[in-house]
Length: 355
Image (tube, rainbow, N blue to C red):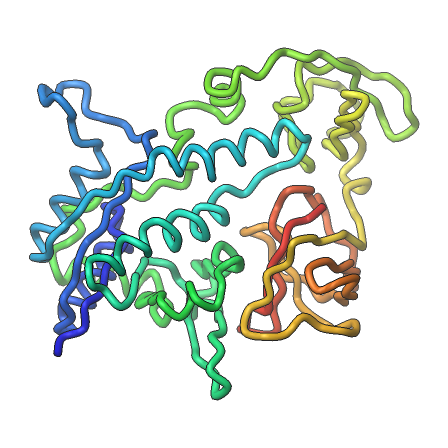
């Protein structure tokens, strides 16, 4: 019997090649495109409910590959679980990571649930990561072989059940290989341009999005330096993030950087780049993948943001879901609200939130 696999089809190159690979492996492939409610629609459309630009691309891809496509309305849950989380994080003075939340709660939440109802045994996505089942039956998450595209960081909160039902066909390929496959199969003319922006903030800055969508009030406050001296004023802490250099508006002999958002006193703390260095952070709500929580300090490599190179560190557990991480070398701009993901060589041990 042919295996039935659902593919989260975004209309982008990676998900298109994922679907084509599985079709060529003689799987019965079902395309699933989920609507967030924040998509752009063509300005010249005359339809009563025009397809979004990305959904139109997803339909074109599915037709060329020869697979059925179902559009799934996730807008209500997406707003509640992803967008409201994004807004609430900024309200609390933290910097959110909505892609990590979306993968856990939308793609491998709602979309996976629908895939199973349609008879699929697995949900495949275009992530550059790998899954391996160990001899003890547990599933572990591995980096993608293409170090420049590895996306295991964004998947570090998936559960054992989610990993058991997930498939990442691109994990053993490089981006160049995927592009060549797309050209060979004639897919490059039928996919939307890849976006590097948040899918719900596309044509505005996140500051504009927060002001328009969340009604963030302008709450002016003081800008202070590391000595506690007032050096200026800000128009709202939500406009800043730890490590930010541009947009502070305070002249000095050397550039200033955002060091901390003091939510309690509504103050922005700035300093020199060297002041961003820190050797320790607290990580909470850790999701361990395929392994029991450690009961003693362990050596790990920790990634504190997606584009950050993993740093040698010692993780000391405080309880099964909380740990302190001490880095062997000081790291710059450790940002509350971002995900911290722990690696042991190519394997993801788990991930939590920097507190």
